[in-house]
Length: 390
Ligand code: RFL
Ligand code: PHB
Image (cartoon, rainbow, N blue to C red):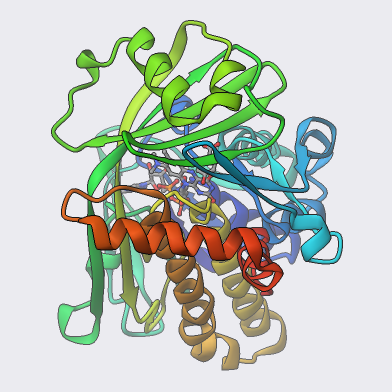
């Protein structure tokens, strides 16, 4: 098989990139290790920045997002009894985020495959990248027991943190920046109305909690737990009890309890791999970087990478201009690092770290006091939360 761009991974990054390239008449093939049902079964992000919304709009695939997405003009930081509202719209000149599940966005992109002629090969096993340094890279994989080969001009590694793309870059040319956190987020989904009309990130003596949602009838909640915790030790009632305490008296008293239909623990990590391009291989999304979910940046960073990568590839194929490809890594990383900083600082502010003592706690209180009383501090948080310019 021959194509212009072989995209590895059909998660949100790969599907978005594929659609953007197809819209410009560039041929691409996507290779995905899982089944479509498995990809759609992963419950992850819920908050979209402007860049993600505008890419869906540019593709003309935003009908459901517009109809069902919930625009949010603000969000809240809770600290015990105190609730600090960050008025995103007022502080950023009318901008907002949109609450719309990653699952739904992925479904919209998947549903449009046929109509837009986007070729995705699911259940592609043993995907391996070859000759990425040169200008004739190729990918091999096994499908239904038979080995196959895709020759391409470029490979886009959109295969998440554990995929093979990043590993195809020799350690001698790459640098890894990493920080692990001593806790994970235990998340649940339940068909109950949210306890508040906006998100609440809470820093409580007993630990972190987040009240989020997918719709007016579906709630998404998280609490942080030590990485040693087991899911079976967290029956729903124990989670609801914990949320009711950690979210503070006001929101806590408005929680509607109900059976959860999804429950999982996700470890928290900050990670960046640089450079994000090596020869003819471009990395996008979680393949190149991970942020802790505090701040809701992961999916949105994948979208901004894809925006830069699609511009670079369109410049190459449509205008014979390789400048965008050469600049891709620096351009993407400049935005990645700012989101890494924001996610890390919000994680530090809102979680109790086991190694922290009274001094670190006093610093959190002082910072929250400062945020509560300073428009400048709130503006900084709001402009980062809503998404920095691309
Ligand atoms: P994905 O979604 O991991 O997709 C990668 C795809 O590549 C496939 N793949 C392979 N394909 C072929 N061969 C191989 N060998 C392969 N290995 C892997 C995988 O099957 C998969 O289909 O990466 P992508 O596309 O870069 O998208 C990134 C986002 O999924 C991720 O950043 C976000 O989910 C992070 N995240 C959040 N981001 C936000 O912007 N806002 C949020 O509110 C938010 N909340 C979250 C989150 C992530 C979470 N978890 C579980 C990690 C909340 C949670 C709990
Ligand atoms: C979610 O709704 O899943 C969500 C919202 C905000 C975050 C992380 C996750 O910061």
